[in-house]
Image 1 (cartoon, rainbow, N blue to C red):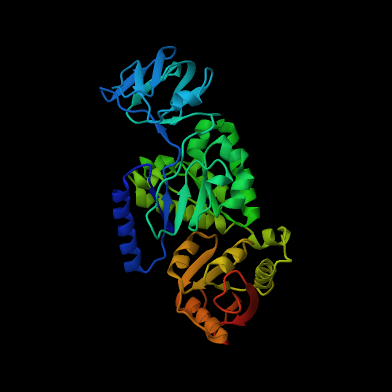
Image 2: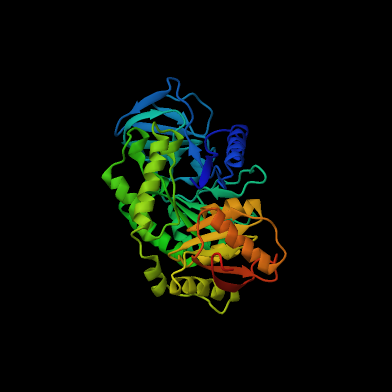
Length: 427
């Protein structure tokens, strides 16, 4: 795997810190640049607990959600968001437990939201509450453990939710996020399409169309897009996925997603290793069928008046013309590799960097294989050692054509301005 996700909706900070420390120990021991993705607790609403642990709701009955602290029963239960009664009105829909339980607001009485049960069923403790079409009024801020490479902010609804030095992946899971997707893409480093919650708050038939549209927009912006939730959901209980799930994973790749993510399959499933191996097999087989060079030829260049953009585009074009084995991007901040990745060349992108954080962050960028290298101050030695590192790591061999790109003067971020084609072993 490239990235380990830590879901802060489950587990306290101390618990998650222990898991993060374990990841650090393993990746150091294996010398693997596995990045940490912190999924922060967003504007989440949950019901509280019932006296008997669960109840059964029947269609048509009256059921109340209250801001008061009470012990739940078959008629009433507390909610974690104490101002919920201020944000809903009669006629609003309230969905609980990923939409399995459906309520319609009948009236507001003090701190109580009196509802009619539309879809009944068994309801257990601490289930999630969704409010389709109701603007979130809850702060999604949560302090993050220091020195982590990436963070995923839940339920991002506008670009105002961003603005951090660390890499921000905006998690789109409601109509507000979809409506503001253009400005969110502009502000964030990447986008996650959280299809599970999205499918609760948005009509199911719209989700595939929204997924396709978001992937296209993020792809065109040259940023990263993660397709997530229920990718191989049946593997939580079964050792093999359904054919529909296999096609779903492949379809996301054909659409241009940068990454595919497992959640419940590995976090709580019976077959976590099998699920991961299955995902990898599907991804490799599908990517072998994608004509990336053909897609590049019809891809809009974008603003090539910018030197970095122009050189990145030219690097990919040169690699295609020479049928190069790989592109070697020498970078400190990761920007050079990200810009090359934007154009999705058909060959491997090898990113050589002396910065450990960049080394890990680049592991989530499409098509990039990051290598940690030593700091160099001579251009000739830098490019020579980068080529040697690519060979030592098995990405290229003597006689292969490679295209190198870097920014000069060395050490200055965001100034990719040089490309060079060479043959491995003849540098």
